[in-house]
Amino acid sequence: MLEGKAVMEDTDMPLKMQLQAMSSASQALDLYDIFDYRSIAAHIKKEFDKIYGGGWQCVVGSKFGCFFTHSEGTFIYFSVETLKFLIFKGASS
Image (cartoon, rainbow, N blue to C red):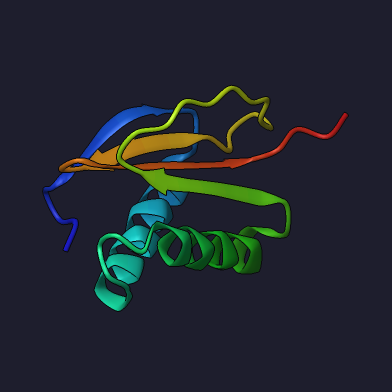
């Protein structure tokens, strides 16, 4: 569903991880209603926890503000039409 439709806003993730983020988002959009933001975010977070270890966070929606600290190399923010995806791993203090 995302092929050619995702617009990268910002990232510091390695390319392989970026592709996984978009793949997980595509899977979630195929499984859940486009307005079921919570289920979409939960699906992506669980995929990232399974593949890259625990501690991932995911925010999905059309309008939101945020301010956070993340571990280097673990942040991506992209959009698909009006839907925004923010995925990151929190920094340990």
